[in-house]
Image 1 (spheres, rainbow, N blue to C red):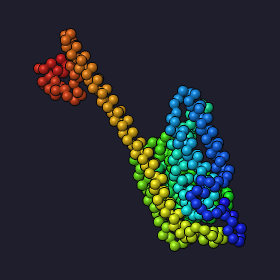
Image 2: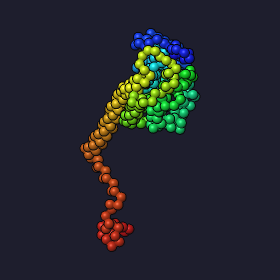
Image 3: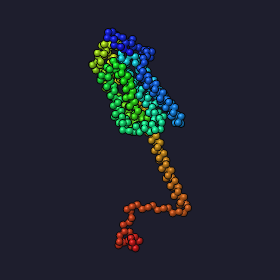
Image 4: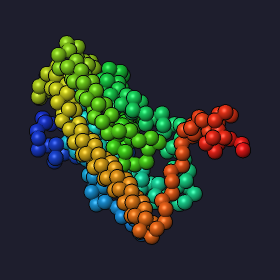
Length: 341
C-alpha cells in the first residue's frame, strides 16, 4: 500500500503482472465478510438438503467463486496497487460492481437464508421481501440507477480522493460496490425471491442502457483533459510506469471495455432465461390444448354411447332472447299453443 511520506516515494515497487498474484495484503473487513458469508451460506445449504430439498452444485460453486474473487480483488496485487495506479482501481471497480455480485447472485443466497431460517423468522423474511421497501429497491429504474451511478459518484465526487487517503472510505468502496451490484443483479436474475417478476427482455434492455453509460464514463476519462486528484499524484511521486494522465486514460479504457465485457455473461444468462421461460410457456399451452382435446373426445364418446343405447340426446337449451315472437302475441298465440290458455 502506498504511503505518502511527504518527501520521495515509499509505495510498492514497479508493477508487473506477476506481482498481481504474488503480492498480498490483508483487508480485514472483506476477509471477515467473505468467511462469515461463505460459512453461513453452506450451513444453510446443508440445512436445506437435510430437509429433503435439492440444491444445485452450480449455485454453490458460483457463490464460492464470487467470494474468492472478492477477496482476490482487494487482497492480492490488485489491492496492493489500488492507491498507486488509476488503472488498477478501475479494474477493481468493474470486478466489484459487475462480476463479484453477479456470481454471488447466481448462488441465490437470499433463498438459502429464507429456506434455512426457523419457521417464524422465515415468514417474517418473506413478508419483508414482499413489502413496499423491497418493491421500491427492486423496481427496474431504481436498481438500474444503483448500478449506473456508483462509478460516476466514485470518480466525480470526493469519494475517490478519500478512498486513496482514508482507510474507512477505501473499505466503503470495497463493500459498497458489491452491495450496489447485488441490488441490481438480484431482481434481474430473479433466482431469489422478488416482490414482482419482470420479463427477462426488460433486463436485456436495461443492460444495453448500462453499456451506454459505461461507454460515456470511459469516454470522459479517456479524452478528458482534466487529471483527477492531480495533487495526490504529484505528492505520490511514483518514479516508475506511465504518467498519471496516461494512467487515467488507460483506466477509462478499462472501465469502458472491461465493463462491456463483464456484462456479456449476464446478457447470456438473461437470453438463456428467456429461452427457458418460452419453452415452459409452450409446454403449458400444449398441455392445456391436449386437455381440451381429451375433454372434447370424452364428450363425443359419451354422446355416441347414449345414442347407441337409445337414449335421446338432450336438446340444446334455447338461448335467451330467441323465443319466437308469435308465441307471445295475444292474437296469434292460441293458434300455436303459446300464451295463457
